[in-house]
Image (tube, rainbow, N blue to C red):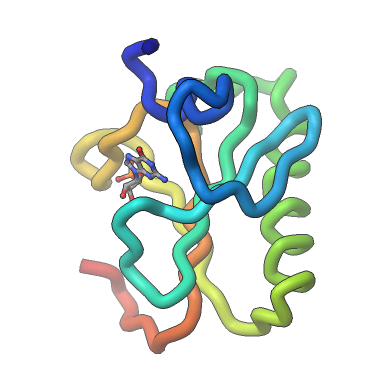
Length: 112
Ligand code: 5GP
Protein backbone atom coordinates (compact mmCIF):
# COMPACT_ATOMS: atom_id res chain seq x y z
CA UNK A 1 0.00 0.00 0.00
CA UNK A 2 1.16 3.53 -0.69
CA UNK A 3 0.35 6.48 1.59
CA UNK A 4 -2.01 7.73 -1.12
CA UNK A 5 -5.35 5.91 -1.14
CA UNK A 6 -6.14 7.11 -4.66
CA UNK A 7 -2.82 5.74 -5.96
CA UNK A 8 -3.85 2.39 -4.46
CA UNK A 9 -7.15 2.64 -6.36
CA UNK A 10 -5.27 3.45 -9.60
CA UNK A 11 -3.00 0.46 -8.98
CA UNK A 12 -6.08 -1.71 -8.20
CA UNK A 13 -4.62 -2.53 -4.79
CA UNK A 14 -7.89 -1.53 -3.17
CA UNK A 15 -11.34 -1.78 -4.76
CA UNK A 16 -13.49 1.06 -6.01
CA UNK A 17 -16.66 1.33 -8.07
CA UNK A 18 -14.99 2.46 -11.27
CA UNK A 19 -17.13 4.58 -13.58
CA UNK A 20 -14.59 5.47 -16.27
CA UNK A 21 -10.94 4.82 -17.06
CA UNK A 22 -8.51 5.81 -19.80
CA UNK A 23 -4.75 6.24 -20.08
CA UNK A 24 -4.75 9.55 -18.22
CA UNK A 25 -7.70 9.46 -15.83
CA UNK A 26 -9.84 7.34 -13.57
CA UNK A 27 -13.32 8.03 -12.17
CA UNK A 28 -15.04 6.15 -9.36
CA UNK A 29 -17.84 6.56 -6.84
CA UNK A 30 -16.98 8.40 -3.63
CA UNK A 31 -17.00 6.05 -0.64
CA UNK A 32 -18.91 8.62 1.44
CA UNK A 33 -21.32 10.29 -1.00
CA UNK A 34 -22.48 13.82 -0.22
CA UNK A 35 -25.21 13.67 -2.88
CA UNK A 36 -27.14 10.91 -4.66
CA UNK A 37 -24.41 11.03 -7.33
CA UNK A 38 -20.89 11.67 -6.09
CA UNK A 39 -18.10 10.68 -8.44
CA UNK A 40 -14.40 11.47 -8.17
CA UNK A 41 -12.32 12.09 -11.29
CA UNK A 42 -8.57 11.82 -10.81
CA UNK A 43 -5.48 11.98 -12.99
CA UNK A 44 -3.30 8.89 -13.02
CA UNK A 45 -0.33 11.23 -12.73
CA UNK A 46 0.37 11.79 -9.01
CA UNK A 47 -0.35 15.52 -8.69
CA UNK A 48 -1.01 16.25 -5.01
CA UNK A 49 -3.33 19.21 -5.57
CA UNK A 50 -4.31 21.72 -8.22
CA UNK A 51 -1.76 24.25 -7.00
CA UNK A 52 0.99 21.64 -7.49
CA UNK A 53 0.21 21.32 -11.20
CA UNK A 54 2.23 23.24 -13.77
CA UNK A 55 2.08 24.41 -17.36
CA UNK A 56 3.01 20.94 -18.61
CA UNK A 57 -0.28 19.69 -17.15
CA UNK A 58 -2.43 21.94 -19.36
CA UNK A 59 -3.64 19.09 -21.58
CA UNK A 60 -4.20 16.76 -18.63
CA UNK A 61 -6.22 19.33 -16.67
CA UNK A 62 -8.39 20.01 -19.71
CA UNK A 63 -8.81 16.28 -20.18
CA UNK A 64 -10.16 15.87 -16.64
CA UNK A 65 -12.92 18.39 -17.40
CA UNK A 66 -13.76 16.58 -20.61
CA UNK A 67 -13.99 13.34 -18.59
CA UNK A 68 -16.50 15.13 -16.34
CA UNK A 69 -18.45 16.12 -19.43
CA UNK A 70 -18.35 12.58 -20.82
CA UNK A 71 -19.49 10.93 -17.58
CA UNK A 72 -22.34 13.38 -17.00
CA UNK A 73 -23.41 13.22 -20.63
CA UNK A 74 -23.36 9.39 -20.63
CA UNK A 75 -25.46 9.39 -17.46
CA UNK A 76 -27.85 12.08 -18.75
CA UNK A 77 -26.96 14.35 -15.84
CA UNK A 78 -27.70 17.91 -16.91
CA UNK A 79 -27.24 19.78 -13.62
CA UNK A 80 -24.24 19.08 -11.46
CA UNK A 81 -21.54 20.70 -9.40
CA UNK A 82 -17.80 20.16 -9.96
CA UNK A 83 -15.61 20.90 -6.96
CA UNK A 84 -11.89 20.83 -6.29
CA UNK A 85 -10.71 21.23 -2.72
CA UNK A 86 -7.16 22.61 -2.74
CA UNK A 87 -5.43 22.30 0.63
CA UNK A 88 -6.58 21.24 4.07
CA UNK A 89 -8.36 24.50 4.91
CA UNK A 90 -10.40 24.14 1.74
CA UNK A 91 -11.43 20.65 2.82
CA UNK A 92 -8.88 18.52 0.99
CA UNK A 93 -8.27 15.26 2.83
CA UNK A 94 -6.72 13.11 0.10
CA UNK A 95 -3.60 14.62 -1.42
CA UNK A 96 -4.00 13.37 -4.95
CA UNK A 97 -5.78 15.87 -7.21
CA UNK A 98 -9.46 15.01 -7.67
CA UNK A 99 -12.58 16.61 -9.08
CA UNK A 100 -15.82 15.92 -7.27
CA UNK A 101 -18.90 15.53 -9.48
CA UNK A 102 -21.99 16.05 -7.32
CA UNK A 103 -25.53 15.69 -8.62
CA UNK A 104 -29.00 14.48 -7.81
CA UNK A 105 -30.02 17.16 -5.34
CA UNK A 106 -30.16 20.94 -5.04
CA UNK A 107 -26.98 22.67 -3.88
CA UNK A 108 -26.70 25.90 -1.97
CA UNK A 109 -24.29 28.70 -2.72
CA UNK A 110 -21.91 29.72 -1.31
CA UNK A 111 -20.70 26.36 -0.04
CA UNK A 112 -20.19 25.92 3.69
P1 5GP B 1 -11.41 15.81 -0.40
O1 5GP B 1 -12.00 16.05 0.95
O2 5GP B 1 -9.94 15.50 -0.34
O3 5GP B 1 -11.73 16.88 -1.42
O4 5GP B 1 -12.14 14.53 -0.97
C1 5GP B 1 -11.70 13.23 -0.72
C2 5GP B 1 -12.84 12.33 -1.02
O5 5GP B 1 -12.35 11.02 -1.13
C3 5GP B 1 -13.92 12.32 0.07
O6 5GP B 1 -15.17 12.71 -0.48
C4 5GP B 1 -13.90 10.89 0.56
O7 5GP B 1 -15.18 10.40 0.90
C5 5GP B 1 -13.29 10.15 -0.60
N1 5GP B 1 -12.57 8.95 -0.23
C6 5GP B 1 -11.65 8.84 0.77
N2 5GP B 1 -11.16 7.58 0.81
C7 5GP B 1 -11.77 6.89 -0.18
C8 5GP B 1 -11.67 5.53 -0.63
O8 5GP B 1 -10.93 4.72 -0.11
N3 5GP B 1 -12.47 5.19 -1.68
C9 5GP B 1 -13.30 6.07 -2.29
N4 5GP B 1 -14.03 5.60 -3.32
N5 5GP B 1 -13.41 7.35 -1.89
C10 5GP B 1 -12.66 7.75 -0.84
